[in-house]
Image 1 (spheres, rainbow, N blue to C red):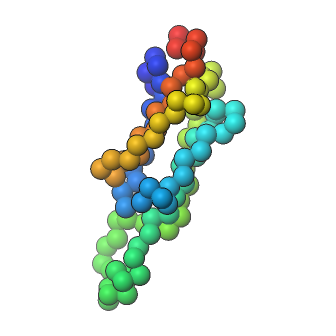
Image 2: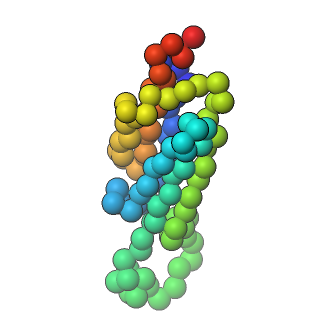
Length: 98
């Protein structure tokens, strides 16, 4: 949290933006990040066995509790994906920066 905004960062390597959802609850308290890390069928079919897998595939969902005393400017929320990280910037409403 900064005086101007709440910043949420999540590691989402291997998740395509069209398989990602970011939703803020109506009371501004819970940010839900969900998606699907998809493994191409060809990659899976060609593999004889896997000795170590550090990336899980399939659906996921994370809920992040936000501070109860902060109201978010919903019209100014921005989300970016870069280098395997999702960054969600939730600006505070005017008057909530103290």
